[in-house]
Length: 319
Image (cartoon, rainbow, N blue to C red; front, side, top):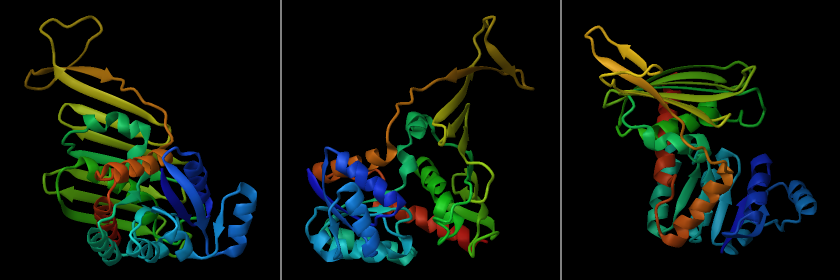
């Protein structure tokens, strides 16, 4: 088992603490929070060990789980890495691209592993169909959330849209060619609604919409590719896979057949991939443990997190 310490005891930090305590792959040593009152309250309520000194906790563990506000990610990760500790960092990896690139260099120098908390990669609906998403040419995503003061310290692109940016980058095997975007600040000092069009060198186009002042929650993505349409509902954990193949010479009574203007006939059929229920946060933490123990690349590496941040910041710059 790997000894782990958590930095940050906010809403998400407490979830990480609970899951790490339950995990068979980690031994939870304790947690740190700069707010002593919060730290002692969480320790008293849940029985976790509270460290009032960050460096003391870092020295006592193998893995540092950083669940602090984005602005502090870089300083926390830098301290952990300089002590030779593996780091799990909640998304976005850092506040600036320069900080992320510095962490990449430090990780290589210290020969340590890092993973970024892009949890949607572990969503069971996305996992069920990711292998079927092959060379998509048009992608549309909607990530809408009801207003919550948490997260408004960063633009909606870094708060919400970056989830979809990372998911898209994981299935589009091409470099970004062009980005255009618009954003509107409604209640926060930074944009609360954003739309981005990302064009890739291979011709794929992704249209992303994110809002944190919606009247309802929605997290849906649609992938269009040759002879297939794949829809992923990240919120409801449902998928829809519609595919086409050459129609048989003699169609059955219930076969769905389409014929284009040239007379080419295609048969429409549906796939129902198995969706295995899981705890996505626990999965991302435990696959990181596996990567450390087996010396393999984490599912969402620091490089992946940096690329997602780079594209997200390009979106913001396009406003």
